[in-house]
Length: 188
Image (cartoon, rainbow, N blue to C red; front, side, top):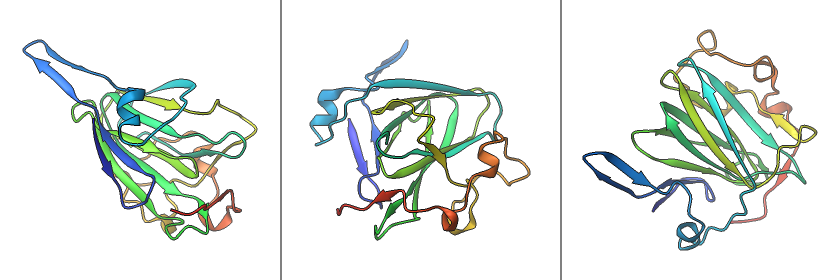
């Protein structure tokens, strides 16, 4: 497994090894041991899969608050996404900044979206399936979001507001400036 640290501290892009031949390839999408070799330890408790039928589907930006925060390990099984995480740790020198990466079934990259960050993506291909490993159970009482196209975030989404396919919930999330402090920065 290769680990690529990103511009914002705990966010990482991972690339599990692939072993291929004429039939295709084999890859371990998750290995507790491989992550531990890079100093990463998580107790993943739930796997989620989303299917987005259309290109331009936007999901997010989502997060859960204490005591139900979640770290997400995001993998694309079919298709491709622009995956985005936004720092929501109040007091962080990177508060409100984001990291974005293209994840696809072809490139095999994964995004590690830590606790304290909002997460979302836009599909770049039809019939895109995304697998999320999470280290906290879903809690509807602690489930919140941030407006996906808030200009203050500066995210270069591959779709316009008119083109984006959104859930009703994602279309009315608050702007960063309207969000109360939800996570505390605890240092590097």
